[in-house]
Image (cartoon, rainbow, N blue to C red; front, side):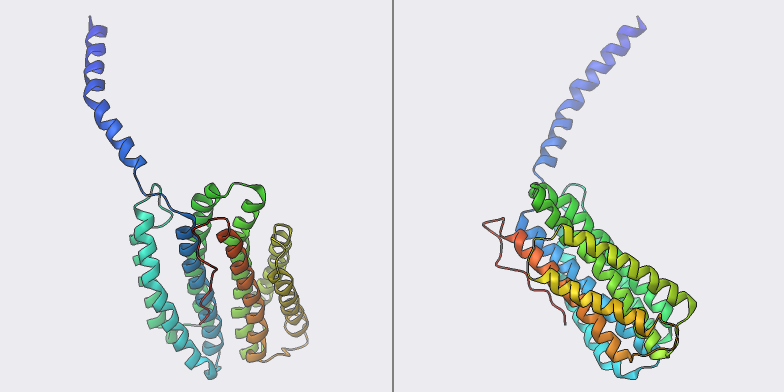
Length: 297
């Protein structure tokens, strides 16, 4: 008798709840899906912020290490980053409306708070503290960018050659640019101080190895455009400078400005490569805008 009662209760609950379940499923199915142009535009904003934060990190390192010539450029770079934040907030609103958002409005609000706190407190920080806090912000952006690439771009572009370009665009090349950006920040501080600590030496050696690995992976998946060989050449130049003028063990042989310039050419080479990869992806969609322009400030 008790089994019959349980069965009847279950049947009644199923009858009552089924319409609500179907309504929820239909509502989820009506959530707006991202188009390829929208996803590429949001990815561009994330990467622009990565690039500019990397530059701000490198300038901050040199400035906090005693090179006052970076102060005006530092203020200009802060202003560029601030102009990009409304677009990030807009994209977060779009993501929040989709199933399993890659980042939300609350995530972005916390990011902006941390960025502004970093800027306000920057004069009282050591170069190492500045590098660490900048790197945390950049890592957050890179995580969002990788998530957008996996959850939004890859389902839209499922051919093997397209997926390789997507992963270059959303993961490998941004990660490569970040390693180069860290090399720029650490090396600029070393050059300004005219001394390389054991910690900086070990970190630079690790970054050189990681850069070489990421570069090899990205070249294997490259769309064979014009930017990849130029980026490779600039990266090889930077690695050679690090090994000969910082890690050689017979003194620091490079000025902060010279080192920053060589490192920036390497980062810019990867940025151009990302832009070219994005253009290749945009051509897949008939509604895509006519090319990516990364704001380097």
